[in-house]
Length: 415
Image (cartoon, rainbow, N blue to C red; front, side, top):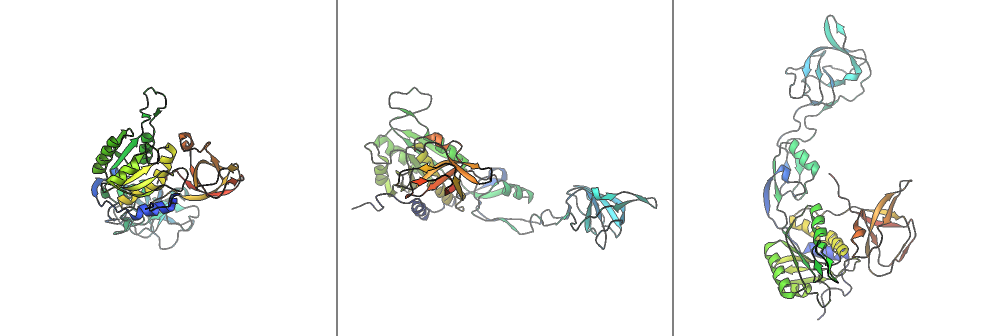
């Protein structure tokens, strides 16, 4: 009986769709103080309990005036007091009156305009200090509405939305001090390989310093996730089986790197089949062909390739969306746009490819992609300063400089 997936592997979009269709949110929540909620998924909608700022406020330093018509050059008003942030003028203004007002201060009742201070003079008229408009003030009243930030009952953020810096600031401005958020996914990482040793240890012939754990934990941290438990183990079935069950029983997701292909020492796929189910194996993608998806003892399992770049690429393209689904949030992805190749590109036909490249802005403003050197999946240096993943179609082998290609922008937004 044949395997239930194409021999050449699934296309990336097919694999992503299949994984997301088979995952359900964990539905586990916690209440956290506002400062601890950055990057987390909102578990329930957040509403403004009152209008914000809750009063009309001056947008700039100047003079709040009471007038029944638009201010004209030569008009003047009697100065009766002042209004500062936290110390408002207590009374309403009558026609012809003005108060000195500072940015953010309450605009008194009866006032319809704030005159910027650079447009006025302060003459003495009939022994009273007055405010005179010396220059045209335009149509802007320079007053912030009482519900400019939010009106009472307004939804500030919906359930399933990820909380960014701007959302945190807005919540704080609306008096919110804690939020109900989805619990972080407990992520177990299994690194396997007879040849692996820890950095800092002298190498024997054929040994390599293990780097996948550093790469993956760093990338996951950048994306807002923590590795809960990590195990590095040799390619020995008994040890691998024990490690996989340990992670599956204590984590929400098990991720492995290495040992998922078809070599003599590649035990991961057969152990997943024994302990759970392999739902598909192999991607029609470069880098990243030896990839497995399934479950171990009821826990979702991702078998990433052993080559570092391939592990990173498949983690970004498939593991990241899955972690977002488990949190119950909307699935974010890297923005896609078209760029031009800075130089010509020659490659072998075969699989679709995601090439690492830097974004360069030409003198004419054109967006150019500069390839980050050799694209072999073992070369971590191709990730350094990489802004883009260039999407190379399977059937194309040669591209002239200036050729236009789709690219994924790897840089995450600040807000």
